Image (tube, rainbow, N blue to C red):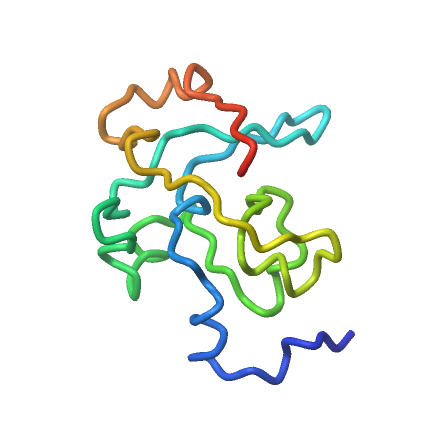
Length: 127
């Protein structure tokens, strides 16, 4: 099925992103219910100060769990933050409003024990 965003260039696609880093936060999915739980645990490669991935071109190689947002999958990902700019492409209820930065609200994945990730589940309005 064709989407309205199918004909935009790669540069236009990348320009949609606000570089908020919210898709770089770990999310958990309940195996039984399918419910998504967001955490404040941030990928080790996201630079909060500059709001960018420090290994962007190699991110999926270095982090196999990093899911590249593409024109083919963007409307199918259940964990997409409510405030994600890509939502405006497919979510009729999307509102482009300023949302809080993740800065000073997150912890790097390298600073936690991965077995304790459930302790970092958050209920932020913007996720």
